[in-house]
Length: 349
Image (tube, one colour):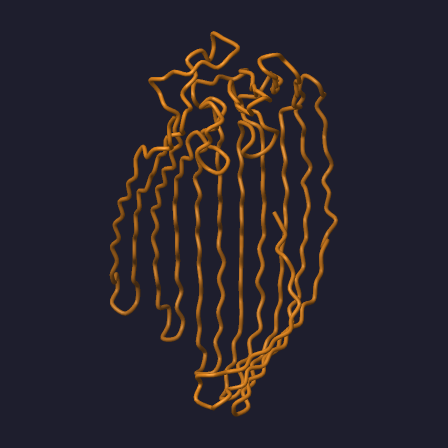
């Protein structure tokens, strides 16, 4: 009898930039406030969250999902020498995905069975460019990226509340407990990324040669939150109001992973009149490890120490590539192209 409706939509943005030192240092700053909210069709807050086992719709409060973002970014460019330029970028962000749901507004879940996810991403970046001659170019850069978030109680839920699901309809209420891990339970996540790159390009009249490296260090940590300390979370499933199944989860939960992705490439493009040939080869390597973890004691398990695991480089791939393009009429408008290469899929933490 209802459809999803807009709760609010807004966006404000402002930017300012200019020189700090003439022909030497420039800046640019940008700020953005953005948000949106949407009502769920036919779902309301639970009027009997702590007074009844069952869900009772509070018709005065419609359920909704909001997504609010703040972004404050700045860039500083420095002409260090006549040929060398260095750029610095920083971005501080805040996001709130309130009443977090898989894929957006969920019409089959009470508000207290959702999550309040608040994140604070940070990006810091530095890049360097140096055209040594009119044929030789050096480039490099690195980035620090941190994405930390907390998934907390919402919709009147309290620590120790029981997650419930009606199997006949799939409707969920009471609390959030899908599984242990990020996005499924109350907890904290932190992802650190350190991508880097460096390259050398040498361009002549007929050749465009380039070689370099590109990689990424990664570190992730996923842990259950303080809402799970001293209690055993479980999900109770009922069928037509009659208890049918109970699932208990061993908490507290902690997961840590480290990874290093490394790539090295060499490529060249050779132009012979109407024919352009290009070829290259790339080496990709993936390393992964887990540090030693101290597992806290829970009701169904004792404290334990899990040893570190460092298998080294677990993946190595060499990928060649060749290609050709022929300017059919010599006017740059019609070309026949062909290529053959080996490609790998992305993996990593």
